[in-house]
Image 1 (tube, rainbow, N blue to C red):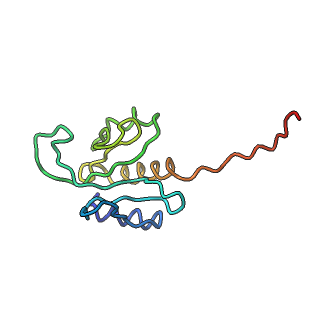
Image 2 (tube, rainbow, N blue to C red):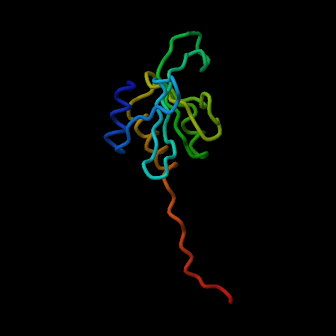
Image 3 (spheres, rainbow, N blue to C red):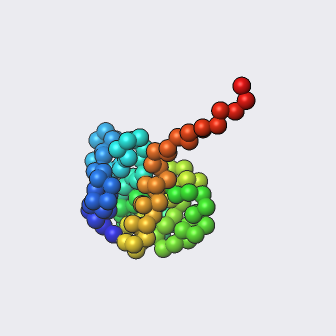
Length: 129
């Protein structure tokens, strides 16, 4: 998937456009929920060397938040690695040029759901007085 295709997917699917919150950095794009403003994705330009490749090629990488139980399944998927520059327990890096588009779409959907605003539980039990 290309960077542009990823940007378009997020806008078409969630109605969210890229946000560029870092001064003087117009390449790193953050995607947030409109309600709680939590990030569900961040797109960066990163050297392949950061992921263990013997190459200085700079590529587009998206970091996504995944539930802990998914790391065993997708940590070994083609193009999916422990997060670059973020908490590796909760975030994964997806190398956009190396990862199948359907997998990128699936993982961004998971990240979106994992970071969405949680409905508060209403306790209708009155309990002892």
